[in-house]
Length: 112
Image (cartoon, rainbow, N blue to C red; front, top):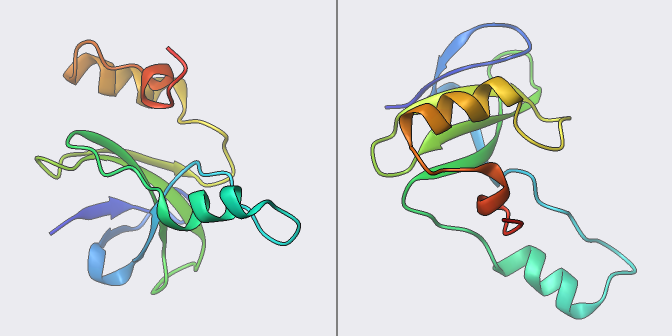
């Protein structure tokens, strides 16, 4: 079972107190977008073996959305942070890099 800490209220929660809401840091498309953009948003998702960033909601607590970084192979949780950030905090990226040599945020997002 996953234990995640809500970055807003500081409560450590089991995943049963939360709602998983898919991949984090997605550009969401709605009305006015092209069919390709909307199809990509709906159906093309990462499913990595390794570090993954997810969006969660603290439904049985403060009700706010937040992001979590975890390893999909081992279920190790690296940390949680505000959903309002465009990328993970630098200290969290450094923590992941220390445990997963060679990993970078830029490569994960296809920029490196």
